[in-house]
Image (tube, rainbow, N blue to C red; front, side, top):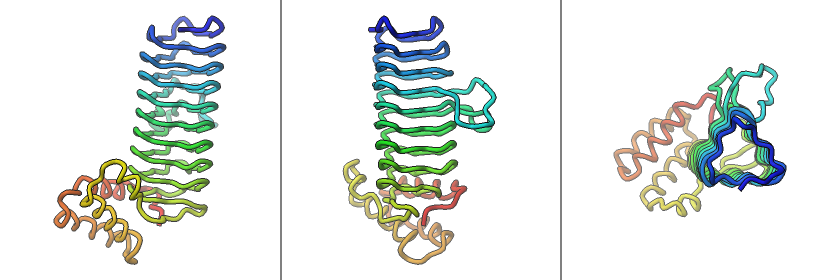
Length: 260
């Protein structure tokens, strides 16, 4: 299960079912759960915890110090959930004490080659990040987001659930849930109707998302007016209350302003 050329610190905690490939290096503060495989030449260091059944391909670097000049060696963390696919040359850094001290990645994510996840990022689950997609520090990405290849996300930006970001996009403002965006400068092109259909959204829920998109982007309303109109949808569209609340919560918490 562990190749004889792998270098694993005696203090590291690996489940007996973990597989480690040739020339991998695993540091003393690393914990890896059952069924996870670590490819050849991977380096896993820092205070890093990895869950069950992850597949980490060759040459990935997980748990390295953040690319932040303020970092002074504090014992911050990287936490990776379960059943994630981490492809070649991915780089995930630990957090900083200036934020939450932890970079957190959920479960069932598909993280393609050369993906970079910087310090203090928080990712949900069922996220797809295509090749060379890059997150700066302190970025939050909610569940079911798809981020196109060569896209870059500015620090402290928040991307809402079910967002689809097109190829080579520049994201410097918060992107509300359910939207379809691309470009540099970024523009909202519509809502992610195909992705929502694939995830089982009913016609009633799709209609509510469509209406929220219209209120935010197609009727010339101020953001405050759009938020008031979105609140009124709860009465007319009771089947979609959870989706409406998701949008309201996102808009209320936005600190960088939303992409419009």
